[in-house]
Structure formats: C-alpha cells, structure tokens
Image (tube, rainbow, N blue to C red; front, side, top):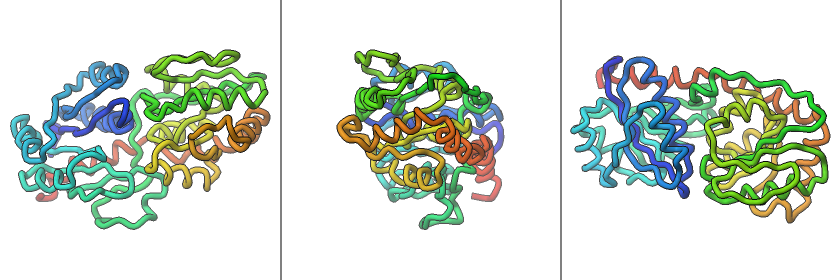
Amino acid sequence: MSGSARVGFRCDAGVRAGVGHLVRCVALAEELAARGVEVVFLGEVRGSEWARAQLGERGFPLVAAPPEPVRLAALACELRLDAVVLDSYELPPETGAVLRDARFAVLAVVDGDPLGQEADLYLDQNLGAERRPFPAPDRRLAGARYALLRDSVRRRGRVAGGGDVPRVLCFFGGTDSAGVAPAWARALSATGLPFSATVVSPVPFEAGGPITVIPPTDRLPELMAAADLVVTAAGSAIWELLHLGVPTALTWVAANQLIGYEELVGRGAAAGLGPAQDPAAGSGPVQVLARLLADPAVREEHGRRAGGLVDGRGRERVADALLAIGRTGR
C-alpha cells in the first residue's frame, strides 16, 4: 500500500460498547490521513454525540456496516478499500478470514485474545503484551511501544501542580457504560480531605461540595494534563495518562481491563483501587484515595513511574507496518 491507499476502520461506539475502540482507531486514522491515506469508518455510533463528533470534526466519514462478514467484504469492495482495521469484540470470528479471502489486508486490534479473528497483522497495545503468549507472534505488534494516541494528546505536556488543594479528574470512558461515576464521587467525598474535582459523566447528577460534574468533553486531554490525580478505569485512556505522566488511581469496570490494571498497579505506575462496585461502601478504596490526596510525594511517584512508558510514536510504528503489508507481496 502507498499514501494513496484507502483504509476502513470497522468499529462501533455507544453506551454499551463504550468509546475506547473508536478513540484508538481515530488515533491511527489521524496518522494515516496525515500520510495521504483516505480513511472511512464502518460501524455505528449510538448514544454518544461526543463520539460522533470525533469523526465529524476530523472529516472521517461513517458508513453503516452490515453484520455479516460476506456483506462487509462486499461493502469494502464497493468502497474500493485496500485494507480493513477490525476493532470490536462483537464481530463474527470469521470476519477477518472472509476479508483476507477477498484480498483485503487486515489489521486486527486485540486485547490479548484475538477472538478467532484471522489477520495479516495484529495489534495488542497493552502494557506487557509482548511477554504474553499469542497464536501468531510473528504477526503481532505488542506492547506500549505501539500505543495509539490522538493528536490532542501527543501535542500536550503535563501542567505542573503545586497548589495547596489537589486537583482531581474522575472519568470512566466516553460513556461511563458501567454507571460508576457517582459512586467514585462519593468515595472522594468520603475521604474527608480537601480537594477540587471534575467528574465527567454523560448522566448529570448532584455531587455537591468541591465536585463539579460535566458532560463528556473534547477538553479531556487538557483536564488530564492539569490534574494532580486522575481516578479512572484501566481502559484505553490509560495510554494517554502514561504518556502525560499524570498520577493515576485505577479501577476496572470490565473483565478485559483487568490485565492492564494488574500490570500497571504491579509496576507502581498507578495506584490500585480494586473493582468498581460501590467504593464508598468499603474502607479500602477510600483509604487509598485519602493517602493519595494527602501526600503529593506518593502521587508523584506513580506519575514518575508512568512517565516514559508510552513515547507517543506508537501510531507511527503501526502505520508503517500496516502500509508495508502490500509491499511485502501479500
């Protein structure tokens, strides 16, 4: 493939699926578009105007995608695509094989298990993925070296803290699909310590005190960079936080996030809060948050260990590998 190639991204976003798949695909699409590649998104965006705006603002078209692999291949042919990026847990396992049989290059973005998908190239950007077994290791780009970051994160540096009252940012993806933001707002309040917090939630709620609740926003990279502490789940946003070196306290809201959670907490690159059930009901999460709010040195040590794990060039390496598929005689 060359700069005149056309690449389709098969992914969805919505209240149930979240927006992480779309966000990381947008990051790779930005890189490809900067190289003259035409990109189109194939799927649906439901219940998140913020997610839909990520495509509209960048001029990336969104085309409804049929669920059947054969019909998807026909659509890819109609759109004159050269390659298809698959990033979804919900696709039929034969999707990649059907696309490859139709002579499309296929990149599958995975989180550990490839879920039966066949691909010319696999991407697992999770920290430590390079150490885990995989059925096709010679065709896998593995580890944080390949983390996909958007332009809005790559061009931003962290804003130093230093105020008397810690600034906290609390968010759980673009849709908070598990609905846990109010519970973590209560956990922060239960510490009894001074702080100023911004909680991102698609559903408004009254938090009171020093907590401001806002809807999903394009200012998230700015808010992350300015925070003294971020409370979030171990989803796709952690790569952005690692790149910025922001002190982070992690929970998890889905089983596929547990690998990243354990890796980051084990390295000391983030504080561990445990599962996102009702954190204010138990003393453990509240105590962890209290320690982080009370001691800047503890917070900053997590940020120091996180900084440098993601250098921001992962999408360039992935784009190089994807565009090289056609030049290696596929």
